[in-house]
Image 1 (cartoon, rainbow, N blue to C red):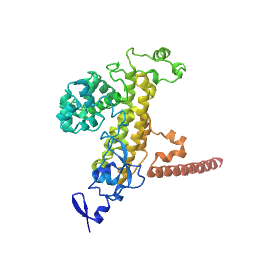
Image 2 (cartoon, one colour):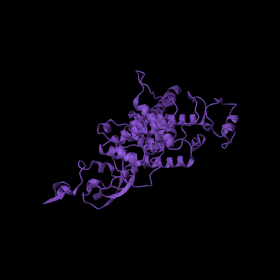
Image 3 (tube, helix red, strand yellow):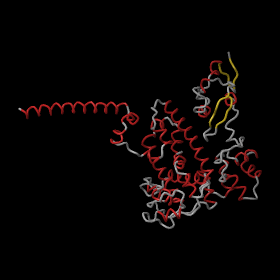
Length: 427
């Protein structure tokens, strides 16, 4: 029996199940946990069952399987249909908004004509929908930006609007070097991947409401302690003291550079967190097997280190740096949810290639980056023997058990030896 489906004929048996090769994009967008233990391959192409999907931008929506397999709806947020778009997607860095604000002669209809798309498409771009590379190149030309800015258009707009000063790279390069990440390679040339990360850092800071054009020290002085790093005791038990008061209260013990700013403190903590996360990622998380299988979740997880690093900075540090508190708190909440979703996807990929799952992946998003570099000492282990198993693998536990047994045998032998020696002395 033949059943007509799409543009070709397939047997009834073939149409019953969804194949990975035919619908790889749907497999990728299947929500990592909201559909329970069910997998897309268990359903038929024509199933009317409504399930949860998640796009590459972490937007989530509910749609039937048949709607997706028949080439119907994609992500409504990316398509501009969902007006409840995250603040990040509605940022003032949007290229369409920049063109309309800075090129008054150009109207949305003109942009649509030049890019050879419909007016509704331009409207969707304005509200955060992804822009194809071909259209993006034309938009860059309209905005007066360089074709090289295609890599990070948002950063190019920041430069164009004067929000980023001329020493942006050197400023971050100094901080990164302080915590063990070199921007330049052995030839003395800038590493393009690290420079790209620095651009993302500035864009992310701007998006969560940190004024990146505020006063800063260059070269930055990060060898001194900022008041917010002190304990309440060190500032005379006055946690509500202002910056100036804290400096005065701490002046007996701490020497401050006069032009050392709150942004310097925030940037220093941010880069230290980021450096610790990257080091931990390279040592504990990166998997060659996943890279060989081209699992994109590994790449995404590493790219998310910027947001995770920022989420582990105290809200008071953001406020000192003139950031908007509600916007930062919203960023904290959103980052936590997105990070958990990515960890879930990462673990699913590990399971698919029969790689073991351990707590390192969850520590990456939960623990403070400073705690990730903590080395468990013998003293720590002896103080909490009941929890030692969580630090050791099965093989390590077996070795430790063997050491304990040998230790007990040695102690008994020593006792016997002492008894024998005492008897010999008495004789």
